[in-house]
Length: 117
Image 1: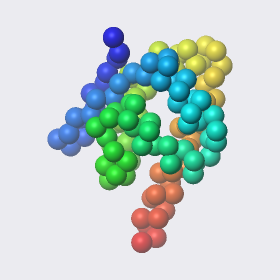
Image 2 (image 1 turned 45 degrees about the vertical axis):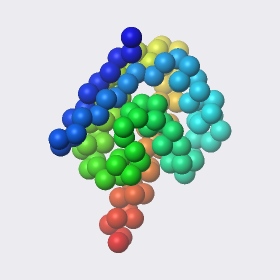
Image 3 (image 1 turned 180 degrees about the vertical axis):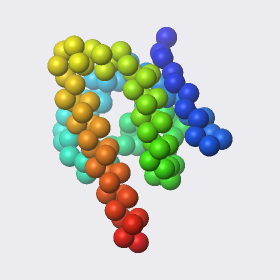
């Protein structure tokens, strides 16, 4: 059975699910292996959301505050804590850090655009 973490933002609840080994491998092979740049990662966010939290769209995600996104990230890391433990054990924590760095870069870019408008 998969771990699930329910994250409540305002009056909405989002179910963040634990990824299977196959889903992690597919993400790595199909999405992340090609190009870990923030621009490429940004185009792949809808695919990642379908796996992790199917009810959450990119448009909805972009409407959230940074604190709400942090709640989602914490839900993701809690639901997938075994993966992160294994990643640290096998020394592949860098992959998770690169994903995190790309998310931060994307958010920074979106924030800069909104401030400029």
